[in-house]
Image 1 (cartoon, helix red, strand yellow):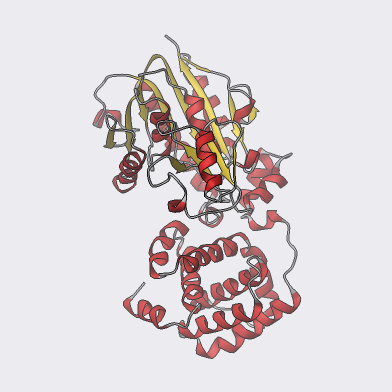
Image 2: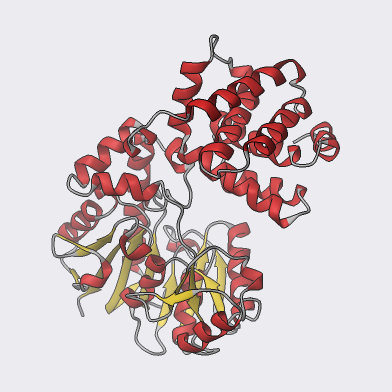
Amino acid sequence: MSKQDDLKISHAAPGAATRMLAARVLAQVFTRGRSLKAELAWALPKLADTRDRALLEALCFAVLRRRSTYDAALASWMQKPLSARDADLRTLLMVGFAQLDVLELPAHAALSATVDAARALGRERQAGLVNAILRRAQREGFPVQPPRDAFPAWLAESIERDWPIQAEAIFAASLQPAPLWLRVNRQQGDRDASLAALEAAGISAEAGPVSADAIRLASSAAVNQLPGFNEGALSVQDLSAQCAADALAPPPGARVLDACAAPGGKSAHLLERDPSLRLLALDIDARRLARVKDTFSRTGVGADAQVKVADASDPGSWWDGVPFDAILLDAPCSATGIIRRQPDVMFHRRAEDVDALVGVQARLLEACWSMLRPGGVLLYATCSILRAENIDQVQAFLKWHPDASADALDDGFGIDCAGVARQRLPGDDGGDGFFYARLLKSA
């Protein structure tokens, strides 16, 4: 964003700046393929009030989840389609729709602030159009569309092919806001004590299933206001991601590699469970790896852990040759299991991206297997729900590695996949979509 844009925001009428920023963020996501997380990273600090920041996020998420519906409404209501040069006007109209449709803000305030935002964007001549379109939305509502229509055709077809029985539930769950899950740091207390502290602070929460460290909040909350969060007693981590520690289950004092560690939640969880682990947190991205150090510092674990910037698929460039007892490979993937948290995935991913990711995953599996000692365990995990990245990948690996066998996981890890892995789907027990394969190396 330019200095001129910053000036427009600072001079915008109350409420208009938030709508203006939401429109700009969404235009970058839709037209330039930018990630929502990256765009919000610069947009949120421009708003001083935490309530405005929360509204900005809510507007962006609502539009991403309802884009196909809003596209249909605009196509029906506008006599002349908007051009590519009108990307910010188009997304501003969608921001207006979301206020009426999803957030159910008072109509007068929503219309007024959105029209003011149009003027702040330099769209004075279109302010009347914005007002008219939003008033029509207020009168007529929006067309009803099945959740499937929110997904690009290739992804919807892939999900229906891979999960024909569960497909409709996957579509619906992926468009719902995800709950806030917390992980209890066992080095600072137990779950019952954390639940009691949350209750005393007036925060409704309950113990989660499957993971003994999981807590689910009844509604979203500012994490730095949660009792114990700043001290590292609690961390934000989805239920399904927490299950990775149980699936790997390294023996006490084991030498452990977290091959794609950033941002560090799974490494920290392993160390909170067993501080005696000799853990190496590895990641190819130096900037993201800095978050691992921050996570270790806040939670008070990892004082003896190693953190290294390196490519796990190229052991020759960094590995000291000492085998690992256990390896966690949370591989780069399509992120199709976490669309409810990252709805922009629906617009960024392409079918060919999956093919490329499958190749990366295979190389990482090969490299990590070479660093695992005989008798050791490797957990291959993804936050994908696509067979090509998950069960197909694991079956191909087992076929070509006679020294590898699958160690069956129980029903708590999700749907059985050919007896060699487990798949959690979006919304299962309130968690994200996640895949786990526990592989043993013969002694």
